[in-house]
Length: 135
Image (cartoon, rainbow, N blue to C red; front, side, top):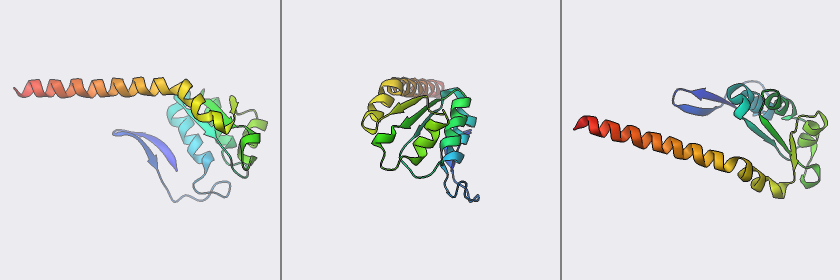
């Protein structure tokens, strides 16, 4: 599973590629594509899980200038995935599970709301222009 910027909007793309780190879909593949496509504007959150899938991808997001967040080990059911990213220095922030939603909303909620409002306003303006040209 990867993300791609497409002419009609951002898309999730599924494929039949070989497993990576023994997984398909692989969090590493997803996060590498996020880093490539969204760079500075990307946010990666790595939560509870076994093994180290996702750690390298989180590192790619960090290298691209994006924000990286790992769930705190003590709040994980299985801490392998976030622990691997934390140990490699790939997590900009370490947040407990019960604080993740609040943290994300406080950091990124208004940006999304503003960008969605701008997009809606742009569409409404485009619609009003096309309606006025039909008259």
